[in-house]
Amino acid sequence: MPYKDPLKNAGCKKRWALANKEKMDEKNRLYKLNNPEKVKESKAKWRQKNKEKQYELTSKWRENNRARYNFLHAKRRAIKMNATPKWLNDADYKLISEFYEMAKELEKVFPWKQHVDHIIPLQNDDVCGLHVPNNLQILSVWQNQVKNNIYSEPQ
Image 1 (cartoon, rainbow, N blue to C red):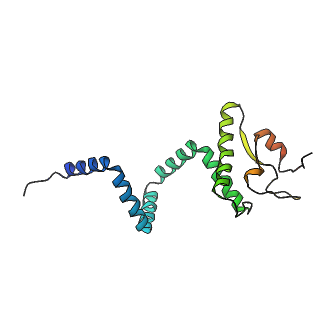
Image 2 (tube, rainbow, N blue to C red; image 1 turned 90 degrees about the vertical axis):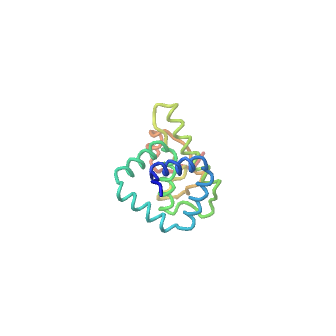
Image 3 (cartoon, helix red, strand yellow; image 1 turned 180 degrees about the horizontal axis):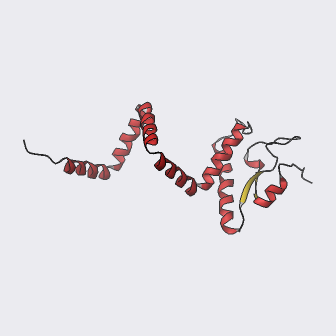
């Protein structure tokens, strides 16, 4: 039996996988669907072994996706405070996300930070608003800090 170089075989498999990306993606998708516990366990082991790399990847993602991170962070806070109604749909969440993206875009134009503010504050002694698209506005950091969770009725 002739000797088979394992590295040569590995290269062949890699070339096949690269040439058949759609087939590999489907195979991987099905594996993840059929083996969620194995996938979860495998990812947990990798994160445990590669804590520095995981931290670096998370930090890089947060840096490159600041608007998305801010949206998710605000959404988490709002849910925690029970300020997000159950009737919100995907379109509403998309609109909320666009507020955070627009705030980031405005920071490229203006020399100051922009905040996504709740017109009716989520926490106030007199009235509490909801984390919904029509309760959001973009303010400069200074304007938002001056407002300080105070609600004044429109004139």
